[in-house]
Image (cartoon, rainbow, N blue to C red; front, side, top):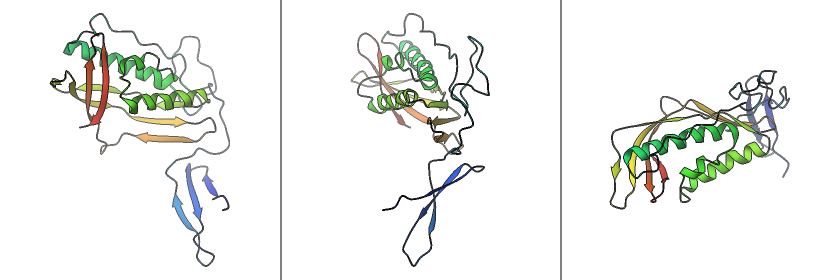
Length: 212
């Protein structure tokens, strides 16, 4: 079968696929879910706005390149590994901070330490973002914060379940060729979740995150 042509509209930054139905019928226009940047590359990775950030100055990612000089989070004070509600809260906030560092750099080394191996959805997501950076892409946005509601529910098996609200704006995964995938928080987005975690005797591990 011949390749399906894709028409790029520079100003609207959308894509339309022409799907041939039959020789006797006209072409059908279907929108493509993945939004595309123009084919012409008008930026150089890492230059952000046409200039390199001064040494040590943090700059957020944009369409021209990844974030620069992203500060490393500070590990919480003693107590975050204790099998207490306070220890859990400190561990989750530390994980979120290192997760935000990872989304801006591709380095999830520390963030992975807070995640259980059984939480495959999260480990696979971290792998996806790491590989994006390794092939020359980057992420714009994606920084999020958690706001806990009430007290956690403690189950008989020692698993703590805690409801939280996820604060975020938008995320763009930008490929080296300029293509990108974008998700945006809207008033209709459900940002309430349940976090499950368990202390294994030495530290807290996040087991899952599910919609509330």
